[in-house]
Amino acid sequence: MTDDDTKFFHEEMGDVKPLKKTADRAHLKKTVEQIPGLAIRRRDAQQVPPQNCDSLSSEEFIPPVKPRDVLSFKRDGVQHGVFKNLRLGKYASDSRLDLHRLTVVQAQQQVFQFIRDCIKHDIRCALITHGRGENREKPALLKSCTNQWLQQLDGVLAFHSAQPQHGGTGSTYVLLRKSVKKSEENWERHQKGKNRPR
Image 1 (cartoon, one colour):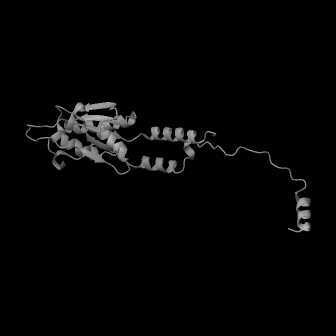
Image 2 (image 1 turned 45 degrees about the vertical axis):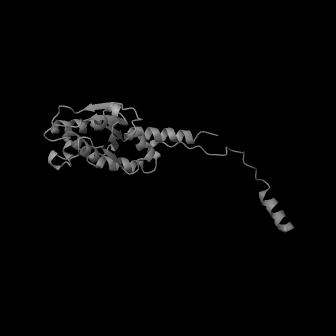
Image 3 (image 1 turned 180 degrees about the vertical axis):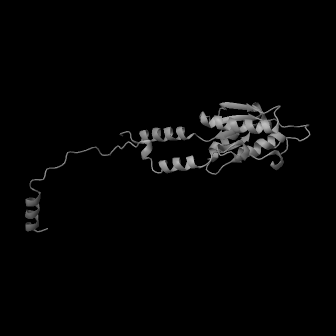
């Protein structure tokens, strides 16, 4: 830089005043409406017709399981550690459904409504008792149906036969999705934690 350049710079910048020091970090609060893609996901969710009880397989299309078989199912995206805790009965079952003495049609309606109610009330883990159906004309019928229906319900993330103290292979732990409202609350709480000054 020559002396002429320096002189020119000082002439041009002579009346410029330094800015006051601001915080090192800008803290922006996002409302739920500003979450990228949320409006699109909400619109799409509203356009998808809700499942109804008739979408579940009827008895004649249910693959049979044996009375003492262990039921196990996990959707993609469910973490291994979460599934392991479910399998070991480490999550409290906040709601329970007993299918004993119900017909297949009654059980189908009960399972469908039970899962809907659990999600509506933000219950994350539930227990369904279906029995083993040993010594029956059609062994493990309700157990086989439960195994099939839970896989068909979008709100179910995973399930596994229960530990002995909770009914063993005659009962099933069910891990459920968060409701849309709960997901939004968790996102907002997470964002507030990230936006705290350090």
